[in-house]
Length: 142
Image (tube, rainbow, N blue to C red; front, side):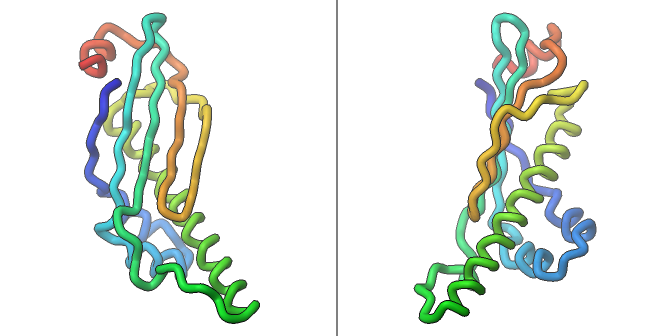
């Protein structure tokens, strides 16, 4: 399995693309605290699979866990957690799209096999639509 360390360059683009004000402020809270990587594996039969993972490396001080003292506060906290999961989902999808575009790992698209999204981590597992070429084997079997 090959790990491709990648710099998270998509955050600025996502800030421009995202029209949601709360999402923008959340994105600003986590700027510089998001890391991603893509692991690849090519099977003997030429099957190309990957796991793309995005992690928030340290929680924002604005979003630390505090026990709610009222139902209203609990609802606000639940809404904030949903907004954070939505942000992680958006950034994971965008990061995977950009990574696959840059690496050309799945040139003909992919099938999503599994997805896991939490408030501090996103992971998408997939299988490329095309089989590995000789060049793919040389590049990704190191």
